[in-house]
Image (tube, rainbow, N blue to C red; front, side, top):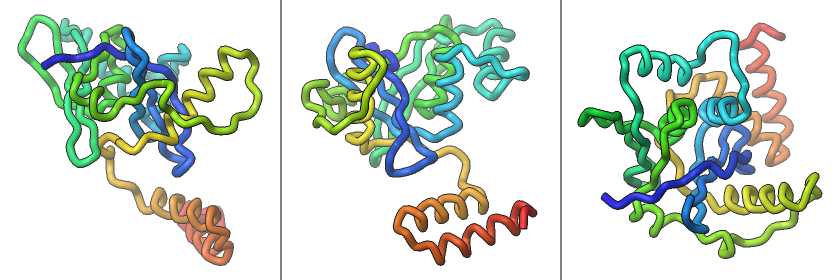
Length: 209
């Protein structure tokens, strides 16, 4: 299996959903970009580590890192290894063993950034899905603090609008989460009567009525 090393370009909110993000990967020794749609909790886990945010108690990926280290194991690398029916799959590869663990790309990457492990994508996926930076369509943007930040922001937003591939979902949505999604959609299409009805149901559910 031939693989290509990638790094994280950034995270951007998916405009089609308030609870989804585009995780944007860039080729280390090239110009191609690979966007993956991930969930909000996983995006937060990755962002926290990149920004040096330390919770008072270990979160899920911090706990996994601690367990791995306590057992004396080391993550050699993570590989985004396949794509099936529009969904990415990843593998966590451990050092000094034949152990490979199936994982969602976001979970694998959240562990990789915590453990300092390199990240790879198979050349097949890069050839099929990745885009050249210059091939990403331009969109109108607002101002940024510096020209470099503006260039990065522009690329992030263009890439996340081009993202059509996602990873396997995490846990099924709860009833409250489904209602919140329906409320977002009702507001988006300006169906305020439905929005009010869903809001009332949410208030009853949370005891805020």
